Image 1 (cartoon, rainbow, N blue to C red):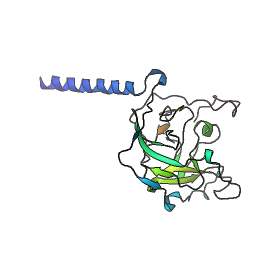
Image 2 (tube, rainbow, N blue to C red):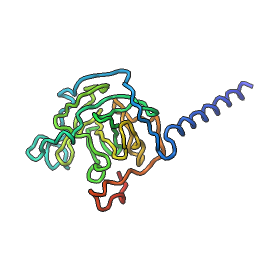
Image 3 (cartoon, rainbow, N blue to C red):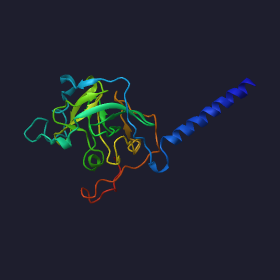
Length: 224
């Protein structure tokens, strides 16, 4: 009788897990969770000088203008990410949000040793990089020691968390959405410590197409 009971417990656990995963991303993607809750352990500050230094900038062979050069003009405020908040959202758990409440992601095709962003052109239109002028966003719930920058090919600076470049997703229509989770099997919500958040893992899906005004071939290349 003991083995039988143990089997029932295992089966019951599997069913519960399946139900939990199913409830994680309802059909149609109508509810990806948007109820933000403060993170339990909050760290307030700004990224320190050592974190925002950019040793990759001069070495990046794809860079057309190193950060700080005359060709890398300061970006307007609406193009930069000036705040990172470690928080928690419904069904997903720990995330990082920008100043507008949009969830940030990391990309498996990028590198973190050293940091390097590979999302350019149409990819960057679908996954806008979190850009910065000074590499010193206001931080809450994110360790300043983990926040840095990396030089992009166009000479702009992108924020990193634990050396992973971070992005938003144009498929997220409102603050707290995380519809970019597991897109292409390469994009994942990033946690305040820089790790992937795999709490909820919907089936692999294609990214939305780039804005039509920006690309004549929008939607034909889903390599990103």
